[in-house]
Image 1 (cartoon, helix red, strand yellow):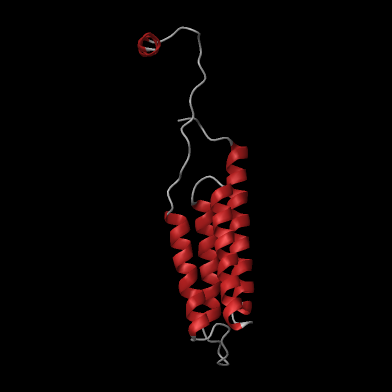
Image 2 (cartoon, rainbow, N blue to C red):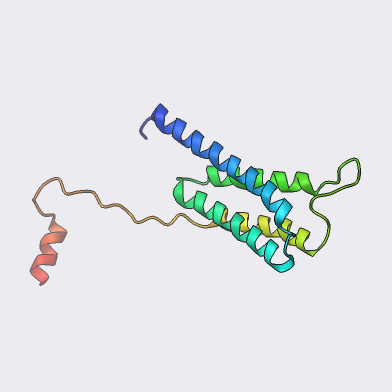
Length: 141
């Protein structure tokens, strides 16, 4: 296994930090807007969260940046669901509030559990000589 380069490690750390920041910001914005327009607010908030997590998963290698975004997204939402000392709460215990919390968990689990689908890369030929299997294929034609 080749030794990872420092620049590649910094790039992965940066993308993970940026994804986590995006998750935190989306958790904050989505928590304040998910009840804005009754059916449309929760749909738009969940669609935005799904878009963020799918986009992070599609553009980065590995699940770590997606996990960081999902954890901070869920952490901010969980923090805003707890009543403050004065008794006010940002995410109330009603249908949109439960849909926001449970929907985020389901979306995060689906995005993180989705298998990596990559085409196997074929190595470039190093010589023009053929292998015995290729000779058999040519004679069968």
